[in-house]
Image 1 (cartoon, rainbow, N blue to C red):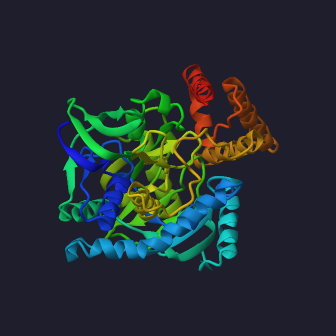
Image 2: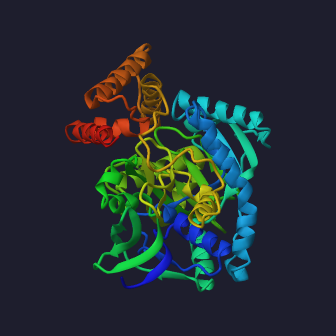
Image 3: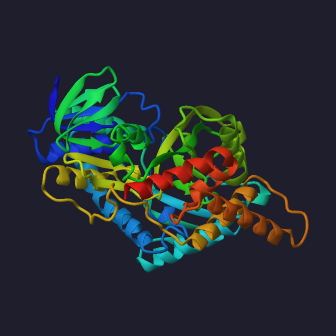
Length: 483
């Protein structure tokens, strides 16, 4: 084989770069290669809003059941690691490139997406109290940077001083710069077409031109693109919950027409997505996000409808003055969503092959924890977290079918309200609720499995049943066969 390393990392997003830095910090003599195109066309990291918090993502469903508190615990663990992680990173960067978290997050609840927004806001507030986190209730009509339309006035708001944001592009540049300065990390601008396995052990990869690279360990950390590489080992791929892209569109705007808030302003998660959010991006600029469209294949550019939707939401729900803002850029990212929506972190039955993906919306925020955990495992020093989400597993049922159907109905209703649905008469609310539930019921019946399809995937099936029902039905049958 041409080219030999201790660790090959497939993927140059936040998780791949962070793990490379963690490996070098633990073993200064290690030889690491990071493989991935500089454009990161289908990645999640370049388009991320990088809101640095875990309580702002809380919903009624996210903290429910066995796995909700576990995922929240990972977020709390990651948050504790960020100060030292940034200090170590900044120590290897020129002063102009050093990073700091911009503090503060306002969460506002308005009446544009139905009851789910109020429910999630209430659960978020209750969980903050439960964990004795700092927050304060604030007047929703007196938040700097907010002047919504009359029918989008917020009904409640809170401020969390310990949650904030980073600039994801500056973080990627900083991580790459620190890795380069170590002199032990090589960057290969290429893609991986397959894994090389000999005697049940991963010994390298095949690049797009057929060149082979050898290594003692291979880490698959290329987001949703990890699935294509994993598919080169079909038997293993059937035993790992499949990754699908959650396509998200975001905008960067510039305005000097009104004062911008130096902190994040966001709504609770709703309507199958991560809520509307406005994130500071330096003087006079903000990042606005984000949509979430679960798909079978990743997207490389935003749709007109998604861009229009974000602009409309921002002007109506955040500040009407954005109508005169300059559109600086648009971006699209593909969040890696495992079929059960839970992370894929750890080793596999193929010795030397590791996976760090399926982190959905949390990859950047969890990166110090995941990176140092994976570095410890690869070097045989032990990880930082319990092995709750091993990559090689049956898809986990986070909810009963009835619970999932109820949650899906809430999101359907929220999406309707958010898109301006008008229900004309008394009693029609109940009629629409029954219609949603009938639709959801038939999706589950047609797929015909004991695995519970998460809410994020139900509308994907419903929108194209002729193609999607066989796809998901065949997938779940393949999982049963594999196990």
